Image (cartoon, rainbow over all chains, first blue to last red; front, side, top):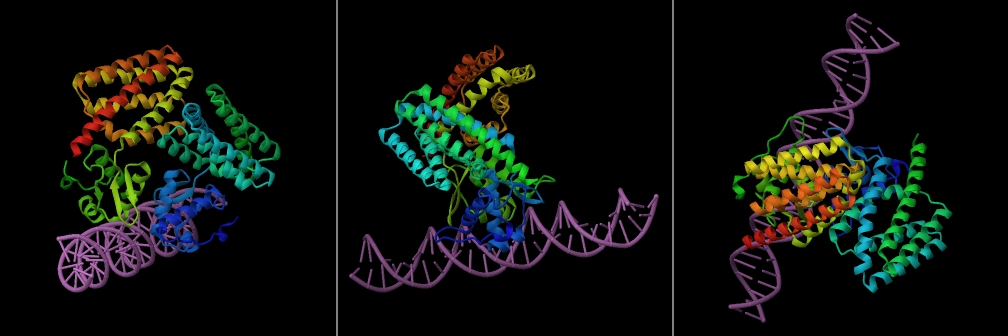
Length: 230
Length: 230
DNA sequence: GGCTCAAGTTTTGTATACAATAGTGAGGCT
DNA sequence: AGCCTCACTATTGTATACAAAACTTGAGCC
């Protein structure tokens, strides 16, 4: 999607303009409308987004703290590069957090929690049947978030989500094929089964397995993205 | 330290004003000059800090993303409250990351890495002898950072530091007594010994033990701070 | 041809003016 | 008295003007 298609910020009632601008810009980066390394020229963006420099600047600052934007003092902001090493490291840390959460989840997840995960899983199956990648993706993440939340540690949940945001655009743009899709579903089924059995060892093993495969996919699609950029 | 003693921002060459302002404000919050819950009135602060609202606002936004400031739309910013539960959760997550790093450190730390940790440890002993709390505190953190860095995962290091910043002001203001100080040193010695032996199980156990005690201290001093605020 | 340097342009950083929202208090009403 | 209203003030949100830094371009020179 080329730059000239960028739509103005639509301001929702109650929100401040910088919040809307932040959300809008974040979406543009995650969906890939703004490609990594691209310069975020303030004049240009203010015109395209229909906001003044003030809220735009506050938005870029916020996105910088989220790792989606890189600030170069006196030289503006660019869309953060996607570094293969960094993505792998991020997934690794997410894996550590997830393993810990999985362990706690086995002990302290309520029946309602597990039922919710099961429900999300079935909805995910529906998404696959409809070939609705977007919804599948959202549901997939929701399951992982739910497991994380079972740990009952708000800071853990928040950290996990922050890391997730940093790799989301890679995963969002990773065009998974049918086989991987089915495989991922199968892995989720294993995780779910282990959770229902409250089997700590198995949950951790399945989560690790799932993560390893995920990293493989991401690495591959990342290489493809890099190649396409040249 | 009352509000009226707040000094103007001293701008270093090369830095932008917002960077200096951010650093300055962060220090004020961490050292406790700005107490939790305190309103950050923009007019007042611009006068005291000698900067205009623009860099000040960008600074508060950045500190908000670091968790040191809470933004209330249309109602300004306040110094983030210190929530006991949140601090405990933060330390817990740091513990998870540290345990993982410790595991990797046993395998992949170089001799130079371990020597550096040892050196820091001895400097810490010197700090205790001199009763230099400030330097001790810095050295203590440096050791933990060094262990984290041994994992060779930049994202892990960054996440750990971010979390550390959020609890730093509590720990900074926690006035530890002599016994706890000695105990902490002893715990560090255990960790160091386990690392030198590259004994994964022992390293993890000692780190967990150290963390548990740390949480106890923080909880106590936090309760004292809360009580003092009333 | 390629390099250097300086004037001009563009772009970002900072200050300030203007707009909109939230807080405040006096006066009137029940 | 207590509460509501409404105007006024204070404060934040946004736009824009001004300053400073970085980039561009082209003339002059080797």
